View 1 (cartoon, rainbow, N blue to C red):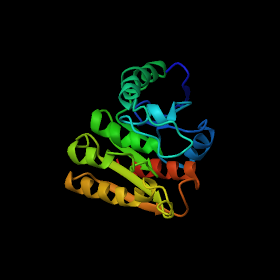
View 2 (cartoon, helix red, strand yellow):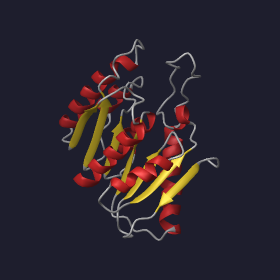
View 3 (cartoon, rainbow, N blue to C red):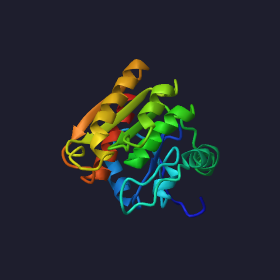
View 4 (cartoon, one colour):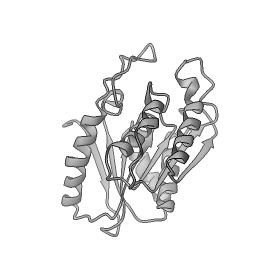
Length: 218
């Protein structure tokens, strides 16, 4: 975890929510776009992750010819995040956040939902174009409840994401529908919306939209 790139933007009130976003890129655009949020919050952006490994819950074979598979190291990374990085951030910047929010895009969205079943720290989560197609994830959600501390979850999906020949990715819309059904069965308050475009359309803009929705609903 020594190679992680960590950026932090401090809010005005030390008690404001602490938002954690795992980002595929540097996070600079996310920081600029976060100015659109009207509510006060602290923002912790983590990048330079081993994207296919640190954010996946268990091992899986590659679904693209260019990939080398997924190592499933999410538990290790989540432990570091919850027990080391977040406490260190609170201490360094003298924060007393009354709530914690986790979110991200693609595999980071998957990680946010997975984290919401593993720890009781988070009050809100957002998964934007989340990789809910990940082998076995929907079945996992059916058998592992979202933390009772979660008060709101935001999901979004591009309206063209299912238009692919990939046997996993073409199921992404169906997986989201199944996920929403699970939320309803678990009495989880949520919001879901479609965005125009495919998986690679305005990823950072969609991510901040998710953040804004969670902040407004906690």
